Length: 406
Image 1 (cartoon, rainbow, N blue to C red):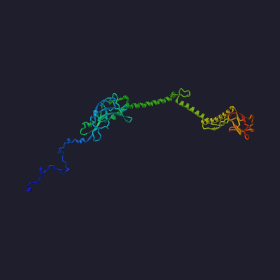
Image 2 (spheres, one colour):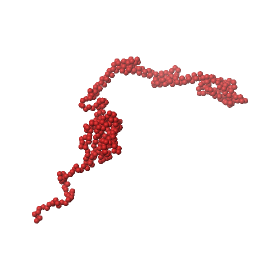
Image 3 (tube, rainbow, N blue to C red):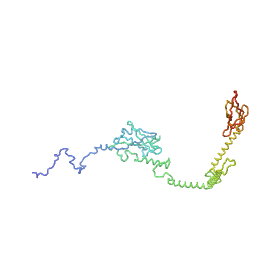
Image 4 (cartoon, rainbow, N blue to C red):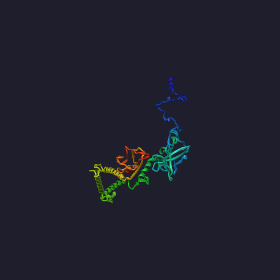
């Protein structure tokens, strides 16, 4: 009867519990989502594992005269993030500051942006203020009349708890949204350079200058040209000499700049001709002290004159000293055996010496000879072959008179 009962089929009760396995499904023909009932909102661990950094903003903080604020109450019990997967406050990120209720950055004395940095100690948070001075980060102190500020710091959280406005405003963004603080401060600096310290950014579309910068530059160029031409005209005029201070100088006859320069040129040429004429001598001087020759320039000629004059004056000085020397005398008792005697009080001029031995005047060249230096001055006497003696305890006595040479 097999052919009368049709094809054999599985009934549901024939399938045991937990019988289906991966190999029972066709990978090329997936099961449609409509046949699977997944509760995605019950699986937030996926979002919690995905970390994200967002801003947290605090408004209306008084900072007048302050360099720091205790913000422990604002940050609350949040811990410090210590890694990419650790939620908490990021101390490594700058804290952005704005004037309360605006998107206006706060600038220091030279328009650098003022910012903050968070510090944590035992659960307490301190917000310190800084700006860049001279290329380095320096502490910043708010003025005594500074407005209140809004600030925002960065925390690391996860996708399951981020605020709904995170994408459009960065998480409690500032009032006007994403203003580039650096660009803003550059505009302030440029405005101050153009308008001066009293300038302002009013953003009303109307010019703040009565004359545009382009027109001012064009006018300045033309004014400079006119002023330069006026100076040239005055220098070329009869009063031109007054511009360089020569009009009242009696040494100049010119009343124009060119005439004054011509006066100077003539004086220089005359001086050059005079100097060239004294650079050499055609013949010796009558006295023979100054010799003919070409000394190259006036200085060489003067040096030659000085050299010759120095030699003549020195020789004259020696002669005058010889003439003016005082009379001198010496007495000497012999010890016996002396064949020479040297004057003790100085040199003697030639032909001025009188020498007596034991009261008897001696004759030069017969009883003795003179001892002289290289200049011919007498320095002593030579008795050779005789010698001075002591006879019966009575010594020979020399008595000498002479005119000192020096």
